[in-house]
Image 1 (tube, rainbow, N blue to C red):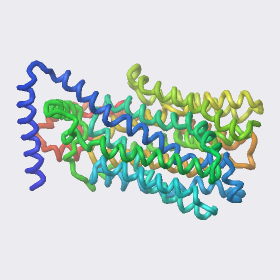
Image 2: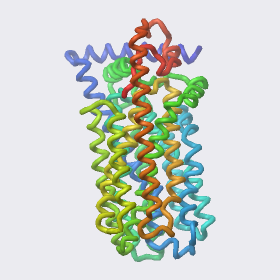
Image 3: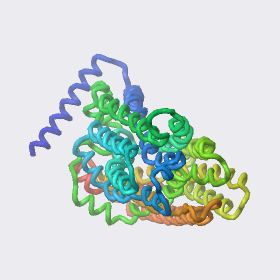
Image 4: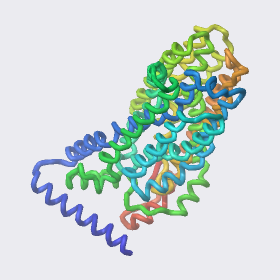
Length: 487
C-alpha cells in the first residue's frame, strides 16, 4: 500500500512539474519534447552500452586470439582441451541470464550492468596468469556467470525507455557492436601480441583488453540512468511527454512489480521458446565465426598474424549486414520474412563452403555467410520484444531467448574440431542445418501469429484499459484483446 501511494504521489508530482515547466516554455509541442527526449536518451544510453558490448564480445572470444598467439603451446594444451575451455564459459552463461534480469529490475541498470562488467573483466585479466588447463576452465566458468546478464539486461532496459518501434533500430545497433568487435579483435590482438615486454604476447591480450572494459564500466556508472521518470538529464516536461508516449505504446513501467505468475506464463509460452530456438541457431553460426574465425583462416595456409588480420574481413561483412537490419523492418515490417530470407541464404552459403576445396572460394563464402548470419539475432530479439507484453514476462522471455544463445556457444565450441582441418566440413554442415531450422521455426511463428491476429479481429472484444489498474493490465501480458502480434 505504501508503494502504491508513493507511485501515485510520484505521478502527481511529475504532472505538476510538467505543467510548471511547460508554462516556462510556451509553444513546445509533444513532438518537439519527444524529439529532445530521444536525442538525450540515445546520447546517454547507446554509446557506452555499444562500447561495452563491443568489449564483452572481445573479452569472451579473445581466448581464440590467445590460441593463435601461442597460448595452447605454452600451456601444453592438447586434444579437445581448448574446446572445453571455450565451452566452460557457457555452462554458467546459460543458467544465469534469467536471475540476472530479475536482479537488474531490483538494483537498476546503472549499478547492475557496470558491476557485471567489472567482475568479468577481472576474470579476463586472471587468464593471463593461468598456468594450467584446469585454471582456465574455472576462470571461464566464472566469466559466464557475469557476462550472462549483459545482453538480456540491455534489451530489457530499453523496454523502459523506448516504444517498440523505437527499440528495433537501437537493438540492431547494439548487436552490431558484437560483429564490429570481430572486425577489430584480430588486428588488435595482432598488435598486442607483438609487444616486447616481460610477458608473453597472449598475456598482453588478456590484460590490456580487460583494462579497457573496466574503464568503460566506470564511465557507465557516471552516465547511465535507470528509468526516464528518474533521469537527471531530462527536464520535467520531457519526462511527462515520454511517459505519455510510452504508456500509449504499452511500454514497460518502472513501477511494475515482479510477478511469479508472469514467470510461469513466460516459461509455458511455446512462442518464447520458438524465439529462443531461432536465437540459438543464429548464435551458433555467429559464435563459431567469432571464436574459430582465425583458426579457419589459418587452416587455409596463412600465418598466425595474417590470419588474425584477415579474420576482420568476414566480421566487417557481418557488421554491414547488422547495420542493414536496422532499416529492413521499416521497409517491410514482417520480421519473419527477413529472418527466413537471411537463413535460407546462410544455409546455401555454408553448403557451398562444406563442399568445395578451393581456398579462395571458401574464404569468399565465409564472408558471405557472415553477412547472412548476422541480422537474425537482432531481428528475432526485436520481434520478441514487439510481441511479448508484461514487465516480468518480457524480462524472462528476453533472458530465455539469449539463454539459448549460450547453448549455441556450448555446442559451437565442439563443432570445429582439429581432426576436421583444414576444410572443417562437419562444422560447416552443422551451421547449415541450424539455418534450415531457423527457416522452419520462423515460418511456424508467422503462420501462428497470422491465425491469432485474425481470431482476435473476428472476436472484436471491447477492451478499455482505463477501467483496469496498471497492475491488472500488466498481468494480461500479450493476451490483451487489443494486442496484435507483429508478423
